[in-house]
Figure (cartoon, rainbow, N blue to C red):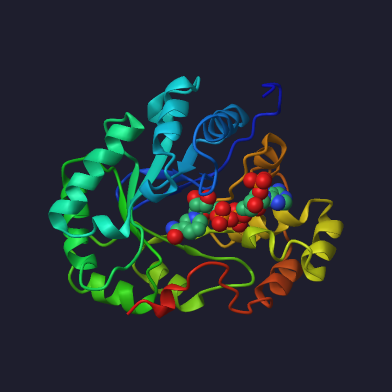
Length: 279
Ligand SMILES: NC(=O)c1ccc[n+]([C@@H]2O[C@H](COP(=O)([O-])OP(=O)(O)OC[C@H]3O[C@@H](n4cnc5c(N)ncnc54)[C@H](OP(=O)(O)O)[C@@H]3O)[C@@H](O)[C@H]2O)c1
């Protein structure tokens, strides 16, 4: 991949862990194992990204780790997230799985470790393992993913450390307002996954019309909506031009009318498995 491209600086948000998180991160779910993932992560770093979101189940932690090593950016400036998969939940199993993830990443710590799903009967025990990893400074922040209001309320009632982050599917077409409100109340940063609706609503007429008005792309409009609501956004692409496009979000703004139009698009569109079905 060519290296000449404008450098993009993304904003950062504070976490209750005492660290900060870059507001745009590169997602790598379904980025193929090997060169494709490594090159897209390196391209992202060259373009100014400082945040990458992987998971054990994506099977590309080793490629992400290789890119972190190869990139011309100090480790201290890079924010790496990985996640505990469902069949590794439970206290001892979670600690073991974390060691394995670190090994594959080739890192001494991760910036954020997430419970990938609220697995019934296991999630509280798994959370205690994440609390230990945080206390031991091996995970500089800890959080959950796919936790909706009932899952969060249960956890907040029992946890020693409240999660620093909740990563959920979030777009103008799936707004999860009750979960966002609870996160706000407890100082939990919301991360938006599948922030482009996996492409399903990029041609929606309201998105296309706002994009025309601000002279940006539909993808940038959808992502900027999340930025203005204070979410971390995790767009995935393996194409350098789109990786650049998806972070070029800080030199324009959506006005109040555009934000209202986007806020009115909620249709409960979950493009993936809906955690509301998880007891
Ligand atoms: N915690 C969880 O349970 C969970 C679940 C799902 C996702 N995630 C995280 O969120 C990240 C993103 O979610 P996602 O991959 O489901 O979906 P997404 O980011 O909403 O969409 C990705 C799709 O959009 C395409 N795309 C990217 N940029 C584009 C652009 N500017 N214009 C048009 N199309 C574009 C990509 O294709 P190309 O790659 O070909 O460009 C890919 O097909 C994941 O990679 C993962 O890190 C987490």
